[in-house]
Image (cartoon, rainbow, N blue to C red):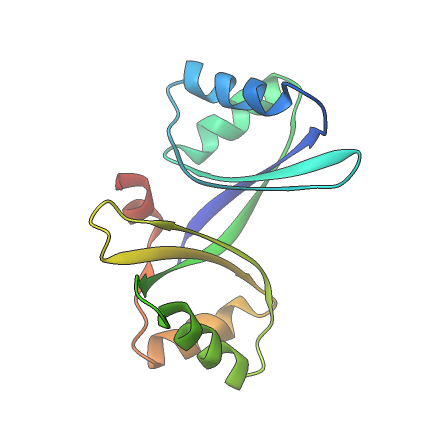
Length: 143
């Protein structure tokens, strides 16, 4: 379950996203997954990268506000109903999904879904008991 995500707070103006990705590129950091949410004034860029500490440090050095968060990555069958089945397991236990985003593995057989739950420990226990594969942080980094 030890998947670390970075949340970077960026101004909602032209070029800021390119600046973040350029800084990471120049530092040799590979982005594995991303999610961008915005408001009128700022955005929150959520990233999973191959070197979380290095990315956090280089972004902070360049003036960005960066927070590290633990999230849960699970393997979901990449077929109709795959995600629905997982969400029904969560719903039946009364667990709230705060946010989520997904990407598909190179093989195309499974998707990886990143979750932030209101009760992470309970969610992980429920998912494991239901036979859902929880992806470890080092697995995400090696994709």
